[in-house]
Image (cartoon, rainbow over all chains, first blue to last red; front, side, top):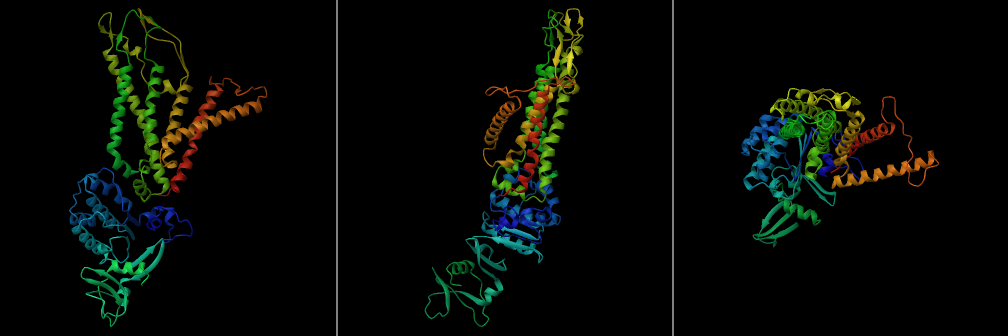
Length: 227
Length: 283
């Protein structure tokens, strides 16, 4: 799906239209407004500053100050050679560059893969502070816990089909996530999973009670067709 | 285009410097620096246009290699994705490679070869020694011809005069047809253009597949020539090829001319094909 949106592959049937563009046409105006952060990536053997000098002019809304700020937060030196950085550092730079392009659509494929625990937290913080209301960020991940605090819509795709789509707000209004020692006395359990501390449960939300969403539990409930 | 130069400028500079040094070494190494008084006019290895032409043709292979290494980003899936998503039109991407590798590559090659040839000549002329007297050879400048492109591309050279100064050879008879330079240069450029498009057509083993394709095309052409010979020259036997061989107005052979045309024009066909292949390229 991410490759279809970014224009890397052509749909086998049907048509895709994003912001009035057909992605596979790879119109430069479209490509300048969509940035894909792939799971696997490569860089030429040049410094960060040279990379920025070479590629930033291709993105009309590129914000250099923003990039410098994010690089500083990620502790990246502008003079470092990209190919001499660790995988995690290179990923951080790619994320920093993507956010600095200010593209209207940012597509992240497994953005937290390769990041250490402090970097994952930094990523969430930077993502939230960098993205504006005009931007759409699509995150595809298997590490749902890494991004559960930054998303506002959950979409679950199974075998190429969208099987669940809901806003976070709607989910918290409908479902209540809890951890109980046992299921005894608990009513309206939609889904439960055993864990070392007892049972993780999803029940129907009542009386306006809201809880933090356990995305992994929600995902398993959806896959098992309990929701 | 600018980002390609920014990213690869070190590589390009290295190629230019290496090409300059290699060209100089080849030319300087081939130029004579010793003259033996006993040498006869015809036996001496005077450095003339045909010598320049041989080195020029050998050097142009390097240009073919540069052109053949176009679209380096299409070598792997990861690099291909990055390349396709660069916010530039397919034409810009295609033209930037063509401009840098073919146009700039050829221009720089011609300039470097000219500088190398002049520099190598200047040094060789200064160093040329007459073995008989152990002194600098006074007619060294005539011994090594001054290089200019006209001598290998435009002149149908039949230099037939000779002058003797003492017992030293000054000129040597040279029969050289410019069509050979053009034909061979175009052949190498054609191979380069063919290689230019290879990465767009084949994902893996591009070189092997392109050689196999070229061999298949060559045999198909030979087969068509046999078939046409049988159609247009009914007396043709077996696998013989009948071709009317005649000399054109400017002394060029019609078959040579025809081969040049076929050899150069057919790979040009690959350019628009390559453009559309790039446009429709998927990951």
